[in-house]
Image (cartoon, rainbow, N blue to C red):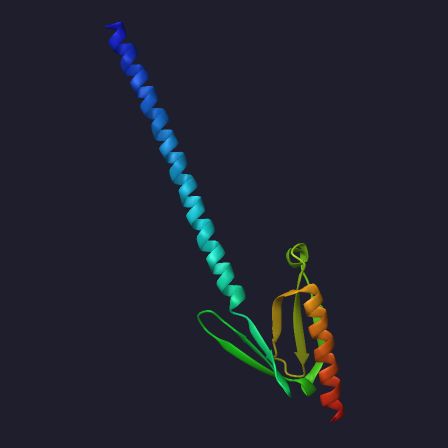
Length: 135
């Protein structure tokens, strides 16, 4: 009788340990799935930003679900900012923001390498000065 009770207790303990392992594996699997989904969403958001330099203006397109296209004439640019918050600085990234006289202007290009952002700022400032001077 004591042996049967001992065997039942050992079996119950083993079953409980197995259930704990299964629960831990299920939680780990769910964390991996959530992590992969988050990575996919972040990649889509960053790949949704595009820009193109044309002869007289800069095109900035963005959006995953709803797309938006901004056309910023070089001659209308008042100044160009290069900003980087703490998270961007940790990854050596920066955001180029173009300011115009229009109150609703929100043209910006995030996620650029710091050096690329500085080069783009300098090139846009040069093109803006040339357009404003009428060259």
